[in-house]
Length: 327
Image 1: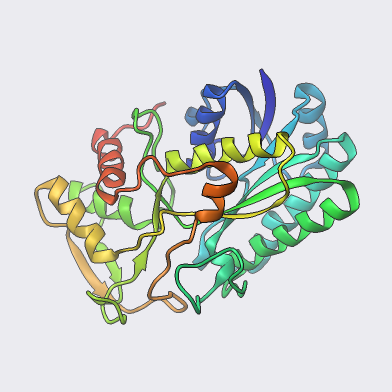
Image 2: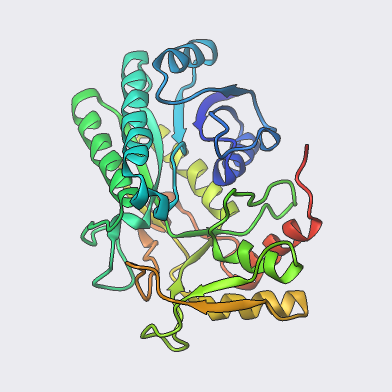
């Protein structure tokens, strides 16, 4: 099996990608500091507990397992926290990635898939959003991801790095087979918060604004199933290993759903109302975001297997309804 280093592989998307890698014949090697990841989610290969900012740790893991490629998820990803504590985000997301890139350079590893984000676009001036849309992030989280994309280009030019940056829209859902799901602390994503409220596992759902210029007044987002995100990483790795060109790719369904549409779908599954309250808008929240993912389709042959909102929510519902996290 081909060894692949997966930084942040104990997290929500990283663990699902490890499962997809294993099925495709790769050996995922997880490096995770377990600040937000979970040891129970590492099931398809070894776990090295450590930080990407620790060069000695990186050297030791690479020397032991000799990965032929890296998939890089390790990052802090709370937008609000990034505004309150930008240094934490630049230190981990940017400086940590620099440490990783220098290790790859020194060990002769030339293939990297990077977990990027639609947050690099900021407030869109056109829809759907293509990869060529101006990149004007409005928070340190998005800025840190954009800085990493620029670093990838510079390392490609100077050191021959081959890379693909996958710009996610709203990751959602759970493993269709029920082995993995969303378990963030704190949780900030709409779908799990709505499900927990309906199940009585959490507080009432707070809706941030109902006065946007959208059909029902709530924000519209592009929800992409976590299993489809994982599959895109496997395809991107195969693409690079076959000689594909470096670059950026959006990952989304190309369809938007409002906050109230999500709530209604959860209520249909739950058979009860989702307890909720309406709060003020969050600063900087665009009214509508959805992707043009045609480049990923054309270059990778990637098409979402689970594009329907009801399916995404059903898989998440079944995960949370079980109300168990493996020990």
